[in-house]
Amino acid sequence: MITLHAEHLKKNFDKKEVLRDVTFDFEQGKIYGLLGRNGAGKTTLFNCLNEDLRLDGGQFDLEDENGRRPVGGQDIGYVLSVPVVPEFLTAREFLKFFLEIHGKDERKIDTYFSFMRIEEEDRDRLLKDYSHGMKNKMQMLVNFISSPAVLLLDEPLTSFDVVVAEEMKEMLRQIKKDHIIIFSTHIMELALDLCDDIVILNHGVLEEVPKENLDNEEFKERILEALRGGEDD
Ligand SMILES: Nc1ncnc2c1ncn2[C@@H]1O[C@H](COP(=O)(O)OP(=O)(O)OP(=O)(O)O)[C@@H](O)[C@H]1O
Image 1: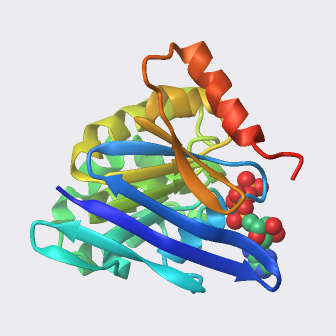
Image 2 (image 1 turned 180 degrees about the vertical axis):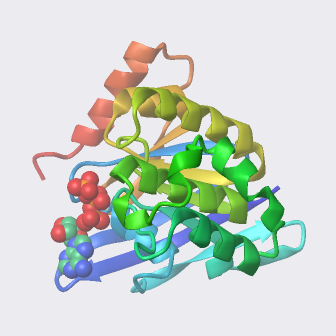
């Protein structure tokens, strides 16, 4: 059982306090829906966790059966809403390179492509000619292969067509038992459909919205209330 502990996180940009005091425990086996208003700090939280930004205070720890230690780069997979792939490589070259550095069986390369529904005719094309959604598929695929303890997904499904989006949701449900998945989205229906817990980032703190025994409509209202919370401050 893995737990990701976020402890008293602080992050400012000049005088702007984005993360004020974020304390939360994320558990293996769950998909967390991270919601927050525009500019609330969701991407900042992900960037700090992925060590792209330095925290001004607090820390992330990972705890498993071997004990507790600070989170390292190898623990985190990050799927960005705007996919970043090496444009100058073909999909096959990129995947081959990726499998090589992760010590995985390169003979499976076509199985991976098929798993991600990347058509045979596209596998030898340059990634710069891939569509946004296809680049996103490649990003998802390499993160599935490297299988990090914590998977951060920043609005990843919006570029997928409806069929692929459904398939991705199913894949995430299948892999969640071994991972901690944190999924940021503005699409409430998606959060309700896919996520086990809803957490809200508001005024620099993170809190869970308990579902208790509310039906979906009541839960949605509770989430909206939390998102609106303190609007007049
Ligand atoms: N590098 C930076 N320098 C200065 N300010 C920044 C920087 N990155 C983010 N911010 C500010 O921090 C706040 C949080 O931004 P962030 O992108 O984390 O929000 P978000 O919750 O992901 O928003 P959205 O839902 O609109 O994508 C915003 O006010 C933003 O302007």
